Length: 467
Image 1 (cartoon, helix red, strand yellow):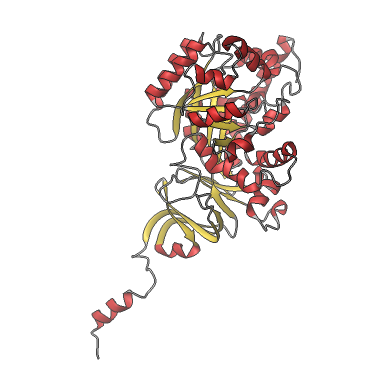
Image 2 (tube, helix red, strand yellow; image 1 turned 90 degrees about the horizontal axis):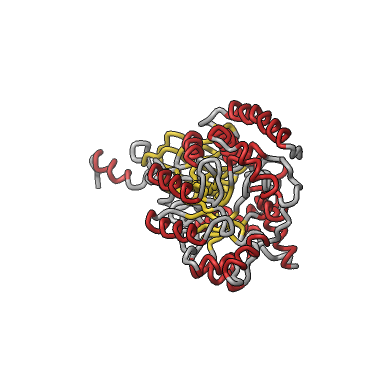
């Protein structure tokens, strides 16, 4: 039988590989990587690829999928780890400018930090500190963070400049602070901020009542009601200190902070509770029932000698729990990777069980677990089709990473923040080969260095010369 040339070409087209004209368009293709998806099945591709278009992931799989796409930029990562961006569920980013001050002072928050902030917190200080912290987080693989501080609209501008994703909570506290004379003024500031950033693709505005003991019952109830009305998060320190527990017990006839928050109607699925150290089984059951998010800040907690949160129990009980660094005056870094080692080892120690808190659970907390804590698991936290393209690449050829038999173990026990090579946030390449592409890192660092003289002068004049 004879075929005409057109018919022969048509028949051949069904068996030939994709041509450039037939390939789908994409913006970025990451290929030849060890892909940790962190999806529900924890799928791993030993030689895999991730395909990005606009702001989303459009394909994840074996390297062969790259034949189906024609990308504006293709990155061959040469066997490095491709994984979801890390999520820092609790920090105070602008406090980078205070890092290493009075690290070992007892009752540091009330004796040192609050007085220091009353003298120094300003828009300039917030901007300078946030810029520095953002760079630190990007270089450590953090793509999303939750922040509590003052002048959060200033923080928001720095976040937009660098291209990160953030949940930014405007502080509400009962005493006068830099941007509000009382709690009601803080709520008003937060409401304006929420309206300004409600529809921003990178920024989720939030309320941030400092803690139950530093706000009245009426304020906490008002914030809870407004959070439901505005459908925004509430970031709060909860069950963190013995002082907090004592104040709340007196206020509530013996209730724990978690039980008190539930009793006044201030605990709901908008809440992201930082620390949750001093909790019992009843508190954990309440937290699960109310579907709150939890930020586990291991290094800050142990540095302050506050204790070890029962985070492993909460994780295993199905609560929404992620990892946080706390502020850079507390744990001193904003690196989630540097939390990994401590989270794994301290939970083994306190549980007297070497098998407790295996590395895969730590990585889950740092990625999809953090997304769950922020109620954003439908958008970020894993490499899946349709999710926002927040992706990082980890160097597997650095001396501290060789050899790798188990990628989760290598990340938790061997890796450090300097091993992060590339970062893509919302589909945009933010860092490549450890060079931040969106801001001037040297200028930001110098501004922070220059500001240290302001801090030094203020500390010396105050008479509290703990440097």
